[in-house]
Length: 232
Image (cartoon, rainbow, N blue to C red):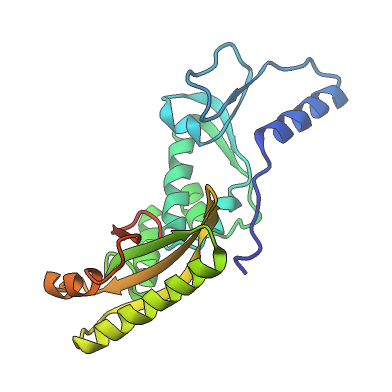
């Protein structure tokens, strides 16, 4: 269930465990630096660098790199999750001579592809799954997002709009269109607002007139995201 979400370990916790390990082994305390989104410059004179995704901003090469808790990305309920996991793993591996991946899912297709170099096989499987379940590049997507400070209102408005969109598509006899949701965003509350989504799938050859007739009826406080980076 996606209601059971894995949580990252956190840089501070990793640093604490590293220091305990070196102390237990009677080893000299290493020079540990941290790189997060708040850090504006790559630290210098470190022996161990603990980094978040902020690492991707820099060109770095190290003899050894460890990816801690790679499973957090696997469990995101998004059709691009495996693709993103493969991209990030390969990019991190290119920064080091040796790469260690910590995972509870060693048979995950993206991790297997990254470890074995069988990227072509990964993409064949990925495209077959996307075609089977109706995801890009075989269909187009539009994510409709609504925000409100009251949870009940957010749910009700999202549900009502979804039902209206369905009726509108039925009225104009649109074929090949599918509506999903409404469903809460992965980060279900942002800055005091509850976030709910409705996902619209439609054929690649859909006419603009059909889309305009459907989306023009949306209330102005809805956000329309065509070809969204993420559906959650």
